[in-house]
Image (cartoon, rainbow, N blue to C red; front, side, top):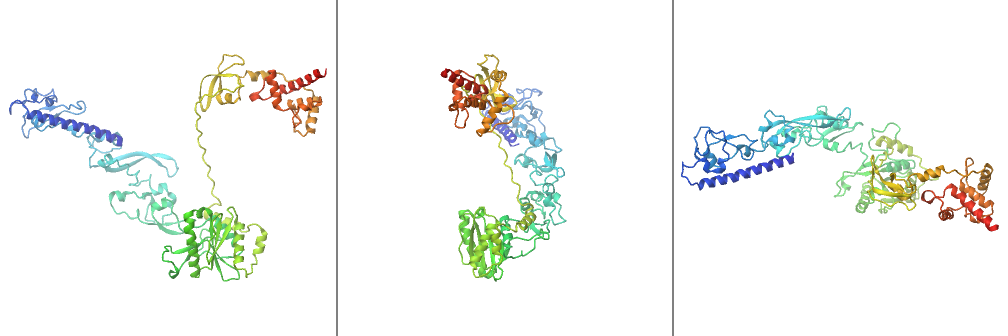
Length: 632
């Protein structure tokens, strides 16, 4: 629509420039006329005479240039020189055309709503689109055809948005559909349609989620009418009965129930607290969690309210969060436990500020009488913390709940050396975690699952290889004909046409270029046919059994059924004839000397110089025959 408006405004600018120049020219001709007043005719002003309509009853030479009668419609008609076919003729007195320089009225209102096809297709007003100016202030109806999700089936469907808007705002300001932009709400963009799970949590029966938006744009902003409930903070209720206030936009962006939130707790913290509860008395949560059924222990964090007298002046939060609170048996001591994971505490800037905050927090909690000691479990390479009422315990990066709980228990036993710890020795001797089933039950209820499914990384679309010609393998009999190209139907496969020199056939063979370059394919197929038609030498059953026994005696794995590989047969024959000097360290013929011999004798090898079955036997026969001749 912006491109159409720019083109239309450019055409309007060209027309305005033409008529401005026309006015200047006509006025100059009238000022320099040769005839006196009442003597000059229209024909003397030739730019105006050229626009004279041939249907006029008189000619330009017969009509005075100053002809005019007030209150009477002009009988003279004119034609537009710019758009003679599109613009209708108009009537005007010659005096207005000559002395005032008046031009075509249609050119002065060249841009109409019809000149913007994209916008004109949405127009649903009563007035013809050709008669509506693109800068009109009239509010007219519009229809936008688009797509929306069916709230029942979840499938996309075509919808129609109907709204009323000003022509000028849509044409000059390029305002889009008010429903698509969220200024108006219907069943395609309402809160009920897009977020039914949030609509079900509204705790105000007077509000209809089908008429409420999902963004800050709505009808009240457009019409400037008070509409409470759209921007105001609304009341919500989660499935566990917790009530809180929030705006629609915050809910859509992911904010949920603060009491059900897991932002201040981690699964690693829960697993550590479950193990420590087996050794110490774990303080119960201040408020029971309604999500937990009977029998599931609560391992939520604790929020301790610090009295104003002990709160530092720069503290802006109302309470202090502690992951777990332990009461040591036989001691009047309350110990807080903090789990410092390497992921959230490894940042240099955050670690420096965090170290100061943790030291200050332990001092404040101790001075207020809320805790006697705060134990920090520092994971990985985090530096230890120091403080009078602070105890730092370092654990390995991949340590489990048992190792972490054991490290905390040993540190507390060393801190309170005079105290007796009845359950600690038995727990350490066990060597395994004993309370993870309680942690799993809590995690399953709070998070919904023990571990989220790991998202599979989408496979990247392989890049198409460039069409680059490569030479054939040195052992190949194929000669390229033409350039490589992509196989039709398989664009990832690059093929090339070849001629086979081995059989001398003139038939073009199409093969994968990489197979020919690497030596996987060396001929048009004639070599394979020749090898397959060649008869293998007959080996007696007695010799096959002897070869199996010979190979098994030397520790070689060999099939107990079927034909024995010719390499074993050739090695057996040489060893039986006393030519074990030709065998390698493993007691078998090596491929390199056999391949060299085949090259010298002109024997055909397999793909990439592989020694074939008959070559093994031919080599053994050649060596035995040569030895017999030398002995003779």
